[in-house]
Image (cartoon, rainbow, N blue to C red; front, side, top):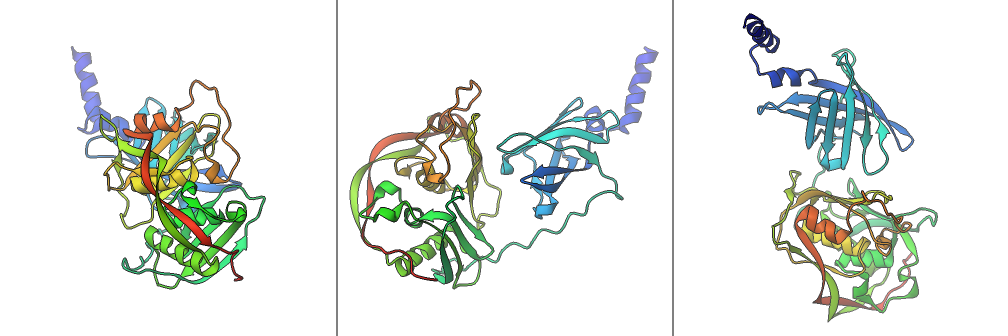
Length: 385
């Protein structure tokens, strides 16, 4: 009995009156830092680990050479010497082993590709890297503005460069490796099957476009589409009329058990992020941040699927999720890269239709629906810059 009482007293002394789980968690709290070799460059990474009011471990990540803001970890756990962390916003995971001295972790970082070594050391006030202040948030364009381009350059793309990109850097709207069909379908929310009457080079000639809006501030998605519509009319001389036809489409609806979606905590006025991880035999990931299901539908019909995609969920919030799926050989052509590798791995994720239901609680099904069709009456190769 005395030995047992001594053990309890010792435990109380160790925790300073706190619970055992708090004392255990405090062994790993603090600042941890290490360097990641990625894309031919060294990136310094900092994790700050703490405990929550609910007596659980929590962490935030900084990629200080990329001047990223604090990115909260979705989960952070420790089981003995094993440390695991997931960061849904980056589709990233970290797993490592805490060394016996408690001052270093040997581990790996995974983000949509092969695992990369990332060893961490506990920082002291003297050794801690300085975390730079994040850049100020961009000034938004007035919501009622309907901008065009003040100036835009259109150049033929490098034929050796794979993939394609639509993005915004500061105020500038940038596209890389985009065809006329890419520009039309993005600007007017159409699938290529909804565009008829175009020239032979509609899908073959690729362009890089950089343009500055004529209105101050960073444009939102709707304003980017307006800018590209005006560019198509001005520089490509696009003229068209619309017709209504019943087409075979994919409809997104809510499954019987309800949607399994996490509302985004990002600034609702910030631009959405929708991007695909690298295709691999183990499948690929579709990373969605701060986006509506309608925006998801637009990307799916533009990059992945062979039919228009219609959002029939009735959901209007913005969401964060990562969809893991194995693409069929005929899918992903819209990304402009090589076809996805075939796989017979038993661990590969399901196809995109099953993944939608299992991971998101949504159904993606083929059906018939009336849809707009753009009939091109006139279009020319772009005018000189």
